[in-house]
Amino acid sequence: MKYDYLVVGAGLFGAIFAYEANKAGKKVLVIDRRPHVGGNIYTEEVEGIQVHKYGAHIFHTSDKEVWDYIQQFAEFNRYTNCPVARYKDEMYNLPFNMNTFSKMWGIKTPEEAKEIIDRQIKEAGIKEPANLEEQAISLVGRDIYEKLIKGYTEKQWGKRASELPSFIIRRLPVRYVYDNNYFNDQYQGIPIGGYTQIIEKMLEGVEVRLGVDFFEDREILESEADHIVFTGMIDAFYDYCYGELEYRSLRFETETLDMENYQGNAVVNYTEYEIPYTRIIEHKHFEYGCQGGYGNTGTPAIQKTVITREYPAAWEKGAQPYYPMNDEKNNALYERYRELAEKEEHVIFGGRLGLYRYYDMHQVIAEALKCVKENLYG
Ligand code: FAD
Ligand code: UDP
Image (cartoon, rainbow, N blue to C red; front, side, top):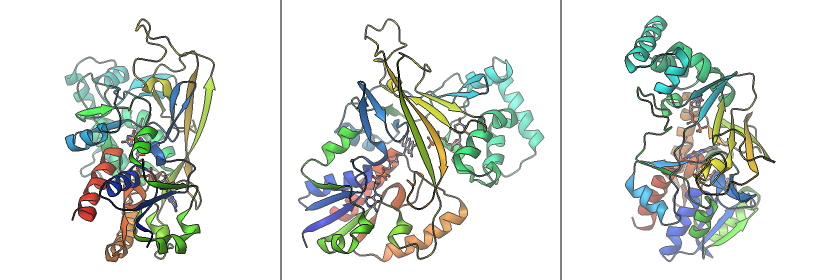
């Protein structure tokens, strides 16, 4: 065997495993079918701006070990995600907080907001929320559900909100204070200089082959390594023997504009169903304090801006599987693949696709570190 580990996927999970294995003296080969490392957190510089190629990526965690771990590879800025929702010509702050409620109903106090939301919840008569629609109404009432959740959710997932699992909406905080921070976590920020440098540092001294699809050279690749760390789609690994898992895909349209400040915020969500994209991101605003629109900060503004429209898309074989569809049916199917995976002695599954979970970066790091402990030091 030429390698101790073949790591399939140069995303966050694969890169952490490769970094730690290399540090532990193992011989590692990393492959990725994309022409670059980083997976979905890949960023590239355009017009002096770090562009998040596969959608907005904001790092957030309450896990000190995870925060300390990632700090080894980059310095983070103090960006706090405060997306704005646009419904027709109305603008609302997210997540759902006193700013949202005040704009929606012209009220001022938490007591007034609670009264309206409680009344709407009561009118809906939902006892145990059984799906995303019922969960959303039970959290914020019908007005907010209709304007800010229903349209966005149904275009994002390509399904009716009443057919989706409720955990998806519980990702978002609901608060009765004037606080637009999208996350409740202790630590938050974006690496100064982008995410790609993090992965590049992790992969220093490791052999990496890009543009290589595991399935096209499977036999040769498998014969070269003792163990495989697989971060691609678990159903594809088993040749879809139990059937296909469902994913949701995306299409990104990026353009550079000759203006200093397009939308005044990094993320604007378009919550009505009729607009085909879910959000527009304006990348320069992720680089807190060194972009246009900040007036007298003393930092000269970049006179151009890069924006990306994010269109949800159906997933079919060959498309990028950005999101697992973690509903009951798919989770049950995944469980069958997981049982096969558990019997493997030489294959480890990891990451958002290998574990079929709607994981954010901090959760992927925690999983990768657990996997390192068990497999390299267990
Ligand atoms: P990936 O990044 O998907 O890496 C897997 C790699 O494996 C890919 O590079 C792929 O090309 C490669 N691969 C797959 N199959 C094969 C094969 N057969 N052969 C060779 N290579 C293969 N998280 C946050 O914490 N904050 C955010 O704000 C945030 N925003 C997000 C926005 C969007 C639009 C998306 C899609 C995700 C977002 N995430 C966010 C989640 C974050 O992207 C993931 O948690 C993280 O990137 C997962 O890393 P990974 O290594 O598991 O997977
Ligand atoms: N969501 C919504 N309206 C919004 C933003 C989010 O209804 O303006 C819902 C939608 O169902 C989405 C989920 O909340 O899929 C989770 O949102 P998040 O921003 O965490 O999604 P991600 O960034 O992972 O795509």
